[in-house]
Image (cartoon, rainbow, N blue to C red; front, side):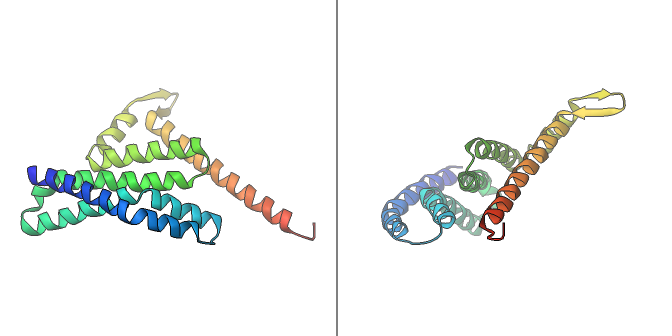
Length: 178
């Protein structure tokens, strides 16, 4: 466990050094780019997470080294931390791309909860617990899991419908025949 802790601390230190060295130059280059706004937004989000992306890469590199030098079980803690950090980076990037802050925060919360439970091996028990918390309504079983799944599906459908409506509206406005 001590070696894994050293790898984490060293990886974080190297990630900070890497970000301090390359982030200013990359930011200057990004500011001079003439690309479409969505791509520029995505690149800016990635740049703001450069330290954490480098940290995750350092952790996974440390895992490879430890596994090559010893048994895979000697990297369990480091693997858990690397998996959680990887999930956090991906969720952080995806949630920053979504323009609606409330929806982005909701996506981040749900995704992070599912990722953390899955990485720690607690997702099956949690899903089972949510499914067991149910009431029977005249032959219809209403569980917390069903309510959560329904809320997620409805949210996604409303979001997709909103995107489709905006796309159709932009096409109608762009049409010269109307």
